[in-house]
Image (tube, rainbow, N blue to C red; front, top):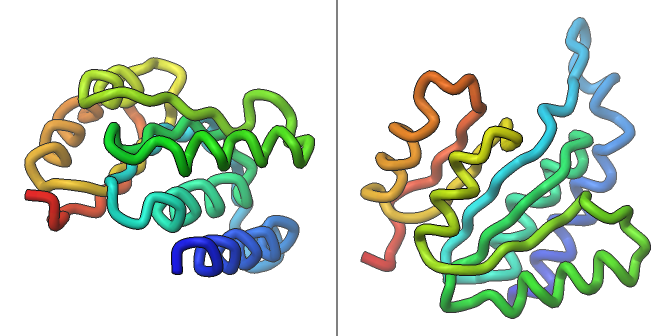
Length: 145
């Protein structure tokens, strides 16, 4: 289930990459820069695709932290990106526990944070980025509680 859905999602957003300028009249879409993304354990490849594909299509770079219990899908995806000759630094993976995610969210070069997971952690992230000017997307209320 994970692989075909992830592939379809990536394909969909790849199709938008060169159309964003014309899709939104009177708007000039611009990349925000480095997107720090934190995903949960369930559907690790699909969750990765949901975060990475739109960010890349909009011209951003990504640093993704998968759940500490399911990092292998993300690491394999990073290897595939290398094999596909994606430029170094466009897709980056970091692994670790909650402290790793906290460091990613608070890094000054991260301009956009996208998090999927528990409401408790989402509230902590919201407090951490408040007043920093970072863009924030939260998908909360996960089933891991």
